[in-house]
Length: 290
Image (cartoon, rainbow, N blue to C red; front, side, top):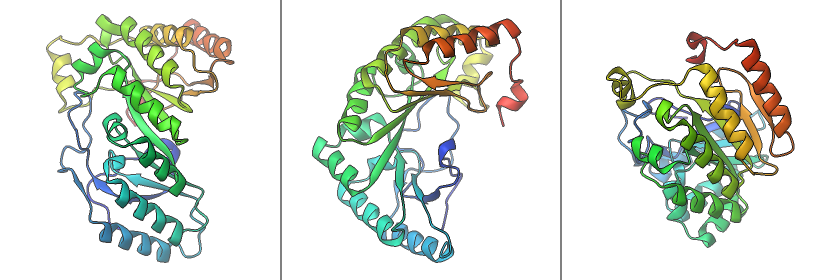
């Protein structure tokens, strides 16, 4: 396989075969993100991708590859007919594959018809990872996400309607002290409207050489304390209505690990928050950035 630049993947794809279908991120404007800054976005020639799959088949000749992740930042942007070709080759070279997944931006889903998404599902695209970041339009504007909460909802519902599993991420603390309530309540509203199979919480880490880093230095953004992050998370949990969604806040960036299934484990998650608030012990920042 050939890789260009830093390759990012969701934590749950740690044991997956990673194939770069695209390079970089098509938008790459988010103020908090330092990923893909040295890559110019492009879709790789399908011949190269097919060659990588063939090389991977040869390299893993004695291993049953069960999962394949299509990178980079938003592989769902690729034309449907080309995606279908790659999905076919994934199954041709790895007949035992059980899951094929990819990153997808909201507008990538909105640009595809329901029929196209259904075709992708039937061809073997099992799951899409989508960065929600926030459900609040003010926060989305501030971070230059380039999408509204209404578009987030439409994109998420469209993916789910096609039978493709959806894993979304939210970033705790993204609205700072000024917008934490709006961030929590409107994120709960959006997640409730979509009801993705998975919702994962990251906690904001300020990366050098980002616009948000400069905003913090000049006082435009005031970060939440660990206890305030708990307040924000609790407000989200009390207001979200997404029966059956698996909730996780066990990423390295999180101050404390949380988990459960919405809505049935609401009280359990709230008890976890209460216990952590009482103990007042949180993961040190030096370990959160690992």
